[in-house]
Length: 345
Ligand SMILES: [Zn+2]
Image 1 (cartoon, rainbow, N blue to C red):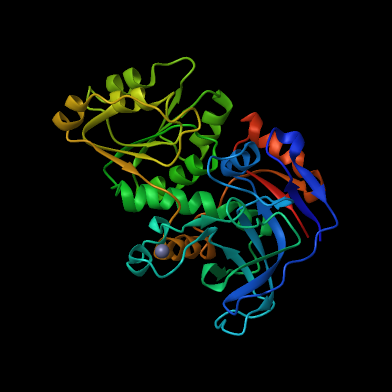
Image 2 (tube, rainbow, N blue to C red):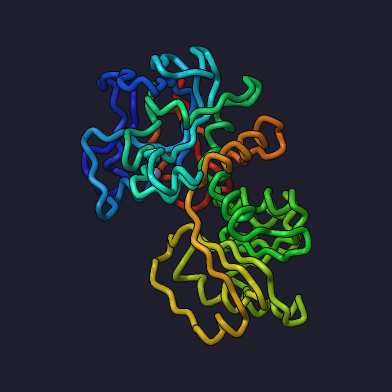
């Protein structure tokens, strides 16, 4: 089997295309095997290559969380999925038995795992996953788009719809437009009818965000984002901030946030330690929300959007699996607008 792997942590020179791996078998009755057609990259994959505290890999470790492909074998307990079905996969694996799972909140599972981080990944000819994570989609959706869709759209959906409860009347600030989660959040916010303030350090990315419906465009290299928002909203500020940058943006996010505002974070790509003035937190009655991945109901909701063609991801570039390291370099460069994808078969 072909696969994109690492055998030790480090820089992207550790990313290795292998042609000699055994294809995984369906061992558990509740699993299915998928013939992978495309897999998409996420920032998480860069963290996996670099090494994450507490996460141990077994070499050769197959990278990747996102996948679109065709069911190729099913366990004896699987119903509702058949060989030949064209599918996407929720990359979040949970034990299905703890109190959070039983309450339908799988991403809170103490044994939550993510494909490519804690379980063998998707950048290979085949991947075996629990059938409960798999959803059939129409064959008309190109595999590169389907693979690019799942992790970021699911993450953005939980942030925007469930955690921030964005309303049509809301102003929403989205940092780092061009990243997968930020673009999915933009699309979801515009679907709701909210007013979106998009931030990037690239005028070109802002121009493209404007084409996708972003209402206000702010270049953080040339504008004081919070001051500009205060000025353009008559000091009111925004209702919601979608922030996955962390240390570099936290202070600005809070300065931009109006009374009763909600700040939702799903990551800290620039660093995890931030400072918050508690007096401003209680006086303005802010809500600071963490969010990660999404539950089964949210996954069903986003897959329905995909099936209906209402939410389609932006694909930046597609690389053959054998050139997967170049795909990782593209993601690390930060120059991409949308998802970086590898085509497998
Ligand atoms: Zn659980």
